[in-house]
Image (cartoon, rainbow, N blue to C red):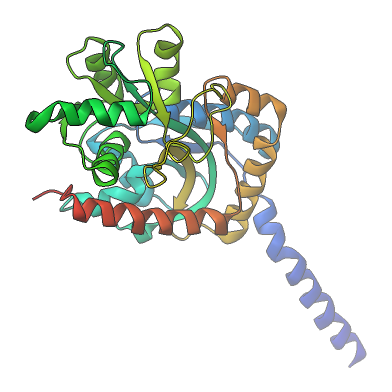
Length: 322
């Protein structure tokens, strides 16, 4: 009888030890981080810098796979429909929040993706062609109002992009008339301002800081919630009296629904450790990108808040497909 009780107790103990051991084996092979944008943009850079540091902590390769197209829908859908086995993740951005708000139909549900952790933010910068007689928000608004009924053209990286939201925020906060001009990418919209085909836009710091520093674009404000580390002389929109004009080009990690929580927690822990290293902070900050970080719960709260905030803007401005 005692022998049987001892055997049962040992079996229970071994089972209890074995359950976490199954999770402890992860990862056993390379992990994919899918970026739903082309190479060279803010989200791609953030992904590659973070992946290199996280790889060291996990002891397995992290492969960056670019799957651009359809406003990030193609890459996002690929992850949403993947197995939740801990080997496929999404480098998500604003489109993760806004696509379901703006598009009549997308091939996945928001609930098919779960948050893992925020990585970093490339602050958005409002810029104008150097010929425009404005160096701050007050002067920009005065100049725009002086244009009369024709309004001012505002370049965006496409309908529903972060620059589109910035334009709608400015319209709502100031009452000026902005004509939204969508381009296929942030690069094209910035080129339009550089050539003075369109006088103004906003774009990620990594995209416009080189042109600002070369005198080819004039900065007006950053729409981030604090000044940019790589360009601290530029005031925020809030500092200039427009706190509701706030948004950034953020990048965070998401996983397919069904990914085990211990894997999500471990990946988040490795992200936090990576973002605290001087090497990662330096690589991001020199491109005008601000490391963010935070817990899984922090990221979930951020996504829910942005979905409500940007959803209200999208409805009021009729930004969605008609």
